[in-house]
Length: 384
Image (cartoon, rainbow, N blue to C red):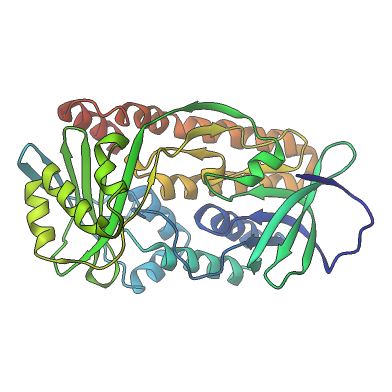
């Protein structure tokens, strides 16, 4: 939905340099960097925080390095997210555990729960000077008569209406982004992957490592997280996981049974603990690469709104952090020198596409679920 500027009466009218729609990892990080650079940023989300979202929430080394560089890593560790310094790989009954070597000043990985990580990022953005409005549902964008996006319309939780005027509008509203449609962001590339991922939380077991268990048409694993629990997950071709999809109230048992079939050793340990949550997951998620900027049009996309890939590669949060840095740098340049806007945003587009290329291609190969041996080879390429 687009609205040409008119004279209708509204409850609130706000003016900011940048408005970011979506206040989770990509959006909050973008707002944080822009606010730290001294810009006037409004960050809105229809959710309230702290709140959870569907995510297995692992951070690769790159994501941990970014949190450290931003001065936020200590806060994540203080929240109780355990630093994990071991990685276990299992194939055909053989398990190999390796230490995580120190690189870029980091010797561990993390899997903080999203209701913790997202709230921490949001608080950091607000502390940096960003204005945060939650419980706000965007209903459309506003354009000048020449087509440039200059703001948005929204509805507040109490039923009021909100008009925001901004020099730049950023869509960070996730894989099913409504902003992408309103902004007219065309899809550059996409592929279909008939895959599903399900996960739950398990307590009562010692979880010292990130674990990855490979079996024919199955990829299972463990990400230790807060309160002594771990995110226990399983991915595979959608058809092979139909028993979990259709299990109803017995989904937890169905997930553990399927994990036992893929990795008996992991299944035995899970049986020694207890499932503490309902099973969540996603089926046949889109794999797309959208154009993330409109030349001279005043808008940009970041995070899953612009680039989404299957969970099998586990890079979602790390990629969102990277792209938030790239976009905020471009917008900082554009805001300081409007004549440089097109070049700055084109550079963001090019650098984002170059950075994601290998991961996107490896995701395509992995979601085909080749032989376990080839699957491991591809995972090693991804790790490198």
